[in-house]
Image (cartoon, rainbow, N blue to C red; front, side, top):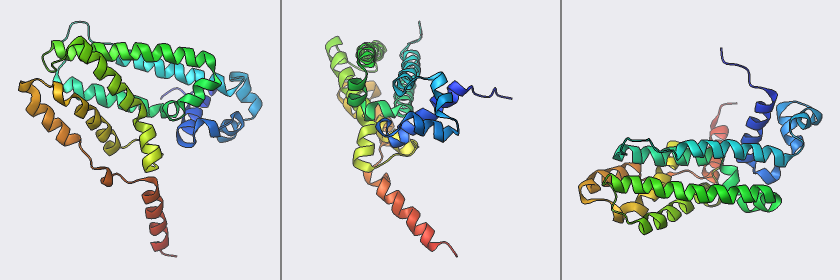
Length: 237
């Protein structure tokens, strides 16, 4: 039997859910306490204020990203690893999407977090560049160090803004589904298209085709609401 989560962990889990679905700016510690059915005083015993909760969630996000960016010591990367890296990274960014949906506000509100995030972003860019260099060393991508650096920047921009794109242009707030993730990965593969080695172009092209999802096939928030309303109206009395 799995151990029951501690009160502290429950607060963090509830905060992450509320921040992701309703926006960090719209959630107070009172909202979190009410969601958990506990008194504000009980919550304050574990976290004195909301910035402390945000900082702890950032710690978790940062730790998971560090693990993700750690390349195998000696094993050479493969084409299968490529899809896994993109899939895992996008999934992780979605799990903590509230940070990139309101990043400027978060960093303005907490100078210490702003400093930590800048350091984290710089490390992430270097790590992404190292991963691309590993694919270049494996002969999958034909990249110079300068090209690897530029591609890393473009990839980070797409990945960190993909969730914001979905929520601002499609009205999507629900949990990530396969279609949304596949289209995000596809966008990255398009950026890499000109660097794929000739012997891997057919396989990478097949991967792109498999991941492509027309945006018209991804239901937005208004579609979901309309669908729910239609279903409710059609339901028997």
